[in-house]
Image 1 (cartoon, rainbow, N blue to C red):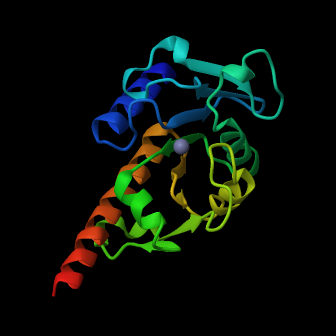
Image 2 (image 1 turned 90 degrees about the vertical axis):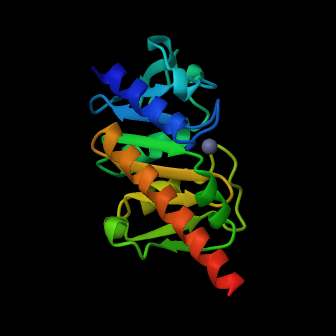
Length: 186
Ligand SMILES: [Zn+2]
């Protein structure tokens, strides 16, 4: 059941171009101590049961080295928020705008629920696994955040909810992009 959710959301992210062939990662809280996260280097568009790694939310175990390189960020979010599921993606328009804006504000009525989306990591190390505390802190009050030049982290109760925020963010950024080019062309 849970594996099906991973596969469906992974495929949807890939099909919509929100992750590239081997980027992005997903995780789910199993109980107070354990989490399930996608394997390091897995293809979200074609996940198999072997690509789902069970490891500790705090404690390392034999499986830990197999987990996604973003494990520190997923762990921090699960430790500091009540999120049940996390989606990390690389939505292209959102990444582009993360390098020109310090926050994304949607003017589209449909996406008001996203509120203001902060861009974290300006002038900081934004490589995978970095900024875990900052991302977790921001997700206490936001559904989704962007990391400068890197991608998005969304938190929901289930994977589908976090996916919904990711797809909505990219839609908002795509429209913002179009509005910006139209205003420039005037
Ligand atoms: Zn990434």
